[in-house]
Length: 161
Image (cartoon, rainbow, N blue to C red):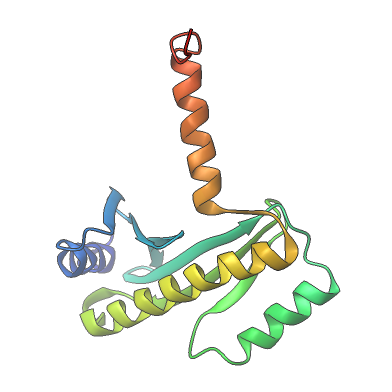
């Protein structure tokens, strides 16, 4: 990691360390939970000695962005303070994302404002989009995957007989 990435990671950890909604995944990846949404916080290198903080929440998976949904997301983007809705065609997933400059100029208040906005928007719109367009929220996918892992470990031992 370059010095800007290290400084960014340290500031993220110091800013979020007391939050019960925060988990460190690895040296450059963190997650926070807000309601039914998860926000991934990635420290991304930029150039030789710069870094960015990319905050991304996967809102709804298994939808096709057709005319009405695409139009709604673009209209919403025009009203946001910052951040934007996006589309991952490979995963058929609607995302919400925002990136800020990291490094030694990263301000804890700016970081918290970014995380708060991304988390609140994600938590609000994962439900709204799923209700109107279908698909699954990230929390539902994670719970489903966790249950599958439990059942795979001992499928016969998880029965009432």
